[in-house]
Length: 128
Image (cartoon, rainbow, N blue to C red; front, side, top):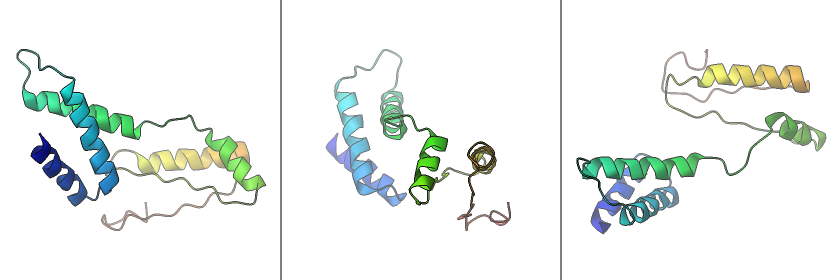
């Protein structure tokens, strides 16, 4: 399994995934696979995919709840800037969510909001 996981980690890094994160995902997948028995009529590929989905889900699940308004107001009180990044592939609603959060922070917290577009691959992205 080691050569396959090493190739998979390299593939993740080739896709700009941090080396530590790629290795962590591979360790979690390996640990999960060592404890898993493939059921009848379930392919090995499907089992690996399930383990991978779980590892990524664990990685992306916040370890604590965040009260965005409370934290932004606390930062303002300390004279600090509070930053939020919206990251994702095209078409998943980042701009819509960004507009909603900005409106919420302005109306509920009386905060000043600055938006910065960083998409340099898609034409019209910054204008959006």
